[in-house]
Image 1 (cartoon, helix red, strand yellow):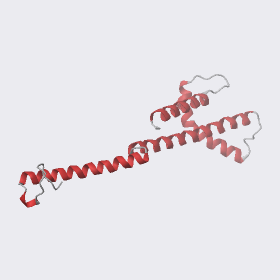
Image 2 (cartoon, helix red, strand yellow):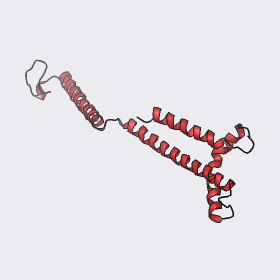
Image 3 (cartoon, rainbow, N blue to C red):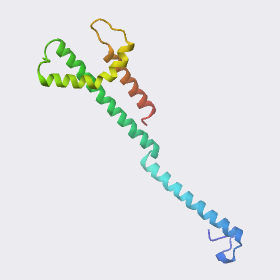
Image 4 (tube, one colour):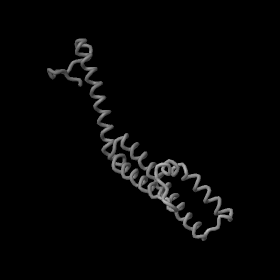
Length: 147
């Protein structure tokens, strides 16, 4: 930076004004390049850019929530079988509390689907549709958001 294009070294006072502003511009540009290089080196060390890390975090959180819903759904299905086959008694307070709690969690998911899906006698296929929906969401998240 201290040398002009002619290669001779001069003090800053001897350089004309337009060249001084050009030098300042060059210094600022070099500083910006250094900052960009530092960011690129940081990204190459981490293997990901900052937005990619954010999207990966969001994808992991969404997958975790879907896993929780998956297991609550499995618990609901198993409990409904055990209640229908009279293995669990709804007159027991603990069983009743767990059953009503799981129903309150899953009913907002089931209700819109039950409006669309026709009743099939004693068979409720809404949990199967929810399982398919959760699996589809997992595929979309993994393929599009999770790097």
